[in-house]
Length: 258
Image (cartoon, rainbow, N blue to C red; front, side):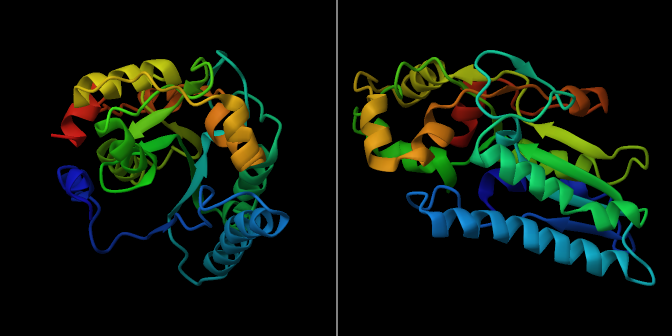
């Protein structure tokens, strides 16, 4: 387990070895390269086929698990500007929205078998050891960081520790099922994220990346991953009593980069 996740391990201690839970977090890396037709097919199939197969097998067990927690993503909502998006918000448009809808529907066999099924719609999970934040660190530490495009697009994020704790939190309550936005209560724009990361690292952030450069280099992936705006809020997670360890971006970054 990554170092910053270890502090949250105790949140799972209450799940005893005799419990019956299942989790599914697998899928092709969506940021692993330009979205060619073949890569898009792998991104979709790795999530939908794997989830459907697992759900069917679990549903057919003599003693199926009591709960299945399956990953999803805030890409479900698509590019929605500054609109606050709760779990009740309708799905959006675009490739990632289509993937997330199909991904969640693939768990229907488990749902129909009476298994309590949860879909965690993750935002960007912040960790210094991997993922998007780790890739940002070198250019930002060199003073080459900057906003992406105009920087007005909202970024929904969550610290790795809070992501782990959210999974653990949802295992036991028997009345909790369906989608949960696994994001901080305080989404921020790309410009705000850039400025805050620069402050924490004590580096300037004066080298913006033009949107047209990203579109030229990465095509559709740039538009949906880097330029789209998704302002998700963790309404159901907060209503369930979950308490964030790192609700504010500056505090989360200081902790992760300490």
